[in-house]
Image (cartoon, rainbow, N blue to C red; front, side, top):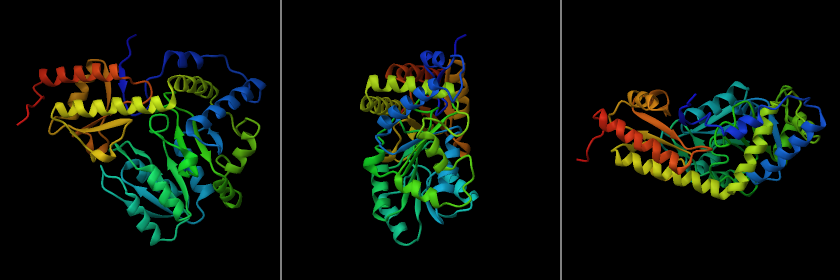
Length: 362
């Protein structure tokens, strides 16, 4: 069977070698074989995340880690940086877990600036800040290094969603002072969904020790107790863990900084080529993501165009919710290389010309 080529924002294309790794026969998650594999993947994740903090494997999606962070690391009140659908959802997670939430919000396509965060923290009493590094609803990548620096100056915990940036863009957990750095594996790590990862600082774990009503499944103290023995409290998704172990080998063979560079080069090409079609970048250019592109079609029906592209064997993500008809999102996460982007955009140009959708510059 010929599978369509994926340019989605997750889940993404998975290498055949990774699928093969996941086809192994199962064994006990309390066996020595599992302990060795768990220890290996944790060591490699530390190199990926550039951290010496504790790293926990969560048997959930990344939303589970958001709930875990809310229950374990927010004492009373949190400031949530919101500039799109997923950063807004992070604020809702905090609220639904009983925390008082203050929102610092910017319109779609824009990012909160360090100066804005600084002013907000000067005028409110919070103990934590949530930040979404890469807002996939609008294609914005926040200036994470600068935002976490401001948060640290105000002595608040930083809880950062790197779901669609970890492994595809520069993230330096220890150097940038990220207390909880969370992601799932189906984006830039290019593993089938079902596993999420978080690094947790000493300060965050101290919060967890004193936290009340934090539940059982996502208790960070419990997670640390098991992680010290290379285990998880509950049954983990063993195939995903061993697949991640192998995928990290591929990343380090290419070189972590080379992987970051590749993502940026492919992303830049997608944006430049789409502008040649007289489309327009939806977010402000200086904060545009390097793992995806949100493109405004300038009047072309994005839904119809993507249907045509799917017929040609290319699956591209729709615009998110209210942006569905007017934008599309090209993911270049994980295993997308320059030749993949060139091939897909050549086909898009053909489709636009055949349907009379490609407009000439005025």
